[in-house]
Image 1: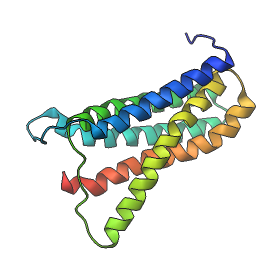
Image 2: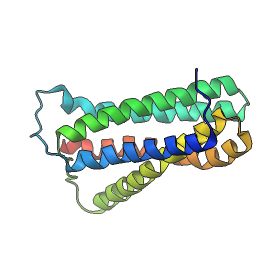
Image 3: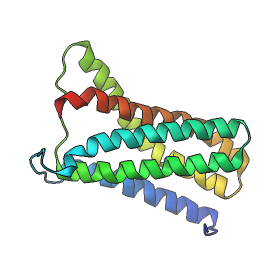
Image 4: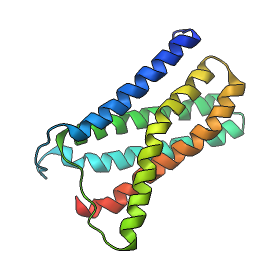
Length: 177
């Protein structure tokens, strides 16, 4: 059961979670690292990240489809699944990046520019999607459906982009792991 919170409590919760999640991701990049090893299960985490991002993307598509068909129970189920897959991604991502340095892209030419464009837009929008997704869900939980629909139009498109580009970034960087 979800506790009933006041509007200002949701605001503090969303700000707190946004700062915590994005703060952990930032600190995962500056934390001391180990040398990568193919003999640990941690080396499989980038693939798990891509799978979780792909599952998030599919769950979001199904959530969007069900929202458009006014199947609210199915929409909620798929949004919940998207949050679960995103949570798996987040935990896996943090474990990997607290353990190992980022893998540099080894490509050249136009491929390098395409990769960095996708990566940079992915990172910027991933930071933005955290509070947007939390606001969208909090509006739905509080039955503020007019505002939920308004915010979710932006949230859905950005979250779909972030989850899809997460898979694309993995595919482009995977030869260099």
